[in-house]
Image (cartoon, rainbow, N blue to C red; front, side, top):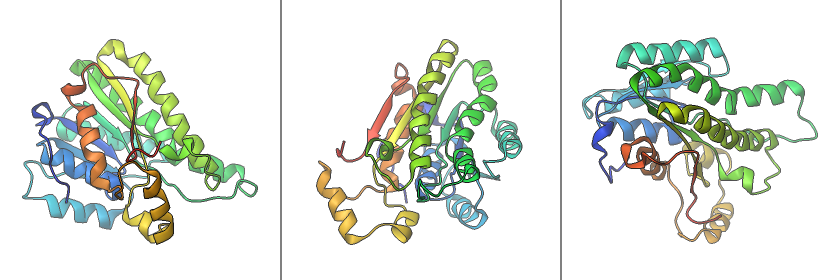
Amino acid sequence: MTKQSATFPDLKGASVLITGGGSGIGAALTEGFARQGARVAFIDIAVTASQALVDRLAGQVDHAPLFLQADLSDLGQLRNACAMADEAHGAVTILVSNAALDDRHEFLEISEAYWDDNQAINLRPAAFAAQAVTPGMIAAGGGAIINFTSTSYMLNIGSMPSYTTAKAGIVGLTKGLAGRLGPHGIRVNAIAPGWVMTERQKKLWVTEEGLAAMIERQCLKQAIQPEDMVGPCLFLASSAARMITAQVLIADGGMM
């Protein structure tokens, strides 16, 4: 369960859309915004985990999150989900593009199709989700977009080059959208997590030795949890960050 360490009054009642909001970091973000009293819609492809999250939060928060099932690599489904979020909660004024797929892959073996499919999950949806909700933000007088990148692209990791390319691209997208949308009062920032101990990471890649080595490199000697991404995201979404845009907030325990 996400621990609510701070309250941002302007988030109460806000229309929030989160991609990949059904598990991992995304689920923590969905819960974090819901506990602020926001009207949260989240897009995910995984039905079981997403519905379980909605069921768990129902009755605990003012507004139960709205689960919108969609494949983000299909832009028609993505646009339809964005429209449904607008219809259900009013114009989305806070967009959190969190969805990602960090499968490992060998550079010398990847095909054109694999590369394109990987970018269609890890980079393209952030651009087109922003495009879909921007008219509503402009009409509302402003908004906030928070894109999740990763410290992985800064660390010369060789086991997932398409993913790290996409995460570097997220930073470029963030900077470009901040410049384009700033005149409309829309702030665009990014969060770069370190190695966050989601269930997926623990199941597939975390080893005792690997985690210990990572923590040794961090200034803060604790494993990073999904809930640790909630505070930075709430802050960037709120009016407390009203003059912050085009920035990348690194949340990695001081490893970089």
